[in-house]
Amino acid sequence: MSTTRPYAAGDRVPDAGDGESEADVEVRAPEPVRRLALTGESGIVPRARDFTRQALRDWGWLPGATADRRAAAEDVLLVVSELVTNACLHAGGPDELRLVRSGKALRLEVVDGGGGEPAPRSPHRAGRPGGHGMFIVQRLCLDWGVVRDGERPGKTVWAELAAPQ
Image 1 (tube, one colour):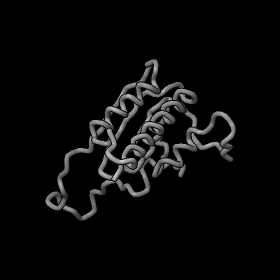
Image 2 (cartoon, helix red, strand yellow):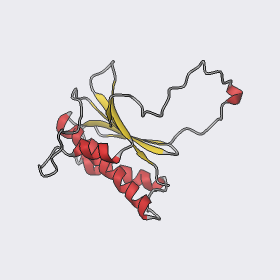
Image 3 (cartoon, rainbow, N blue to C red):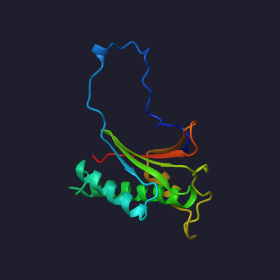
Image 4 (cartoon, rainbow, N blue to C red):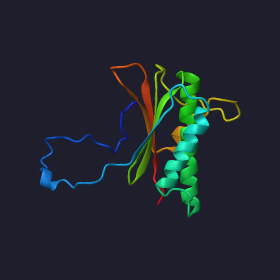
């Protein structure tokens, strides 16, 4: 699903007027977040994959004990490659890669300074070289989208993948 929502469909922004007092709210440790600055770097795509692979190891996704866990980790690495490659080809290169882990999903965010809008090529033609990146992202992810920061040029392209069971 291609979307320009800043968050996945099931997410909601906390509302101060939701009737819950501080005593009613469960206090949890902050979600683990990993950041990798990529501005002006060379070998960006392999570096982003290596960074992501290490985070997946630290979070217990790798080495995968089951085929499903290994497949989930490989999907994450492929989506990171596609998002970072898109930023290199179409947005002058990525500025930052962010990985945000929650219990049910992993959110990947690639920040760049480009003004373009990523979209799967339509119609998708499997036999043609190139143009498959966002189609792959769309197929592998729970959801994805684009967030624009009104205060600076550029965007954040995000994608969410389900955490392995």
